[in-house]
Length: 33
Image (tube, rainbow, N blue to C red; front, top):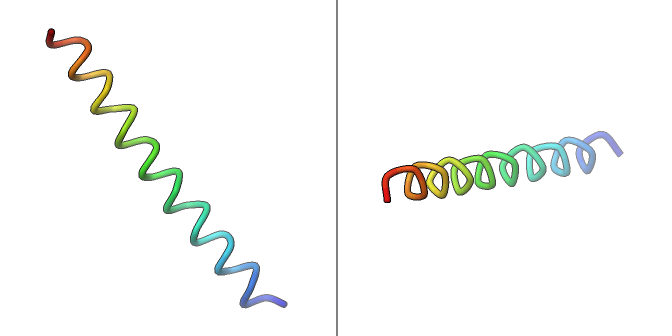
């Protein structure tokens, strides 16, 4: 139903945020050293 879809979207958005933060950190660390 709609609730399940909303939960999936929420999880998907959260995982994208985490991946983006990890990528940004990796780029900053790689660029610094």
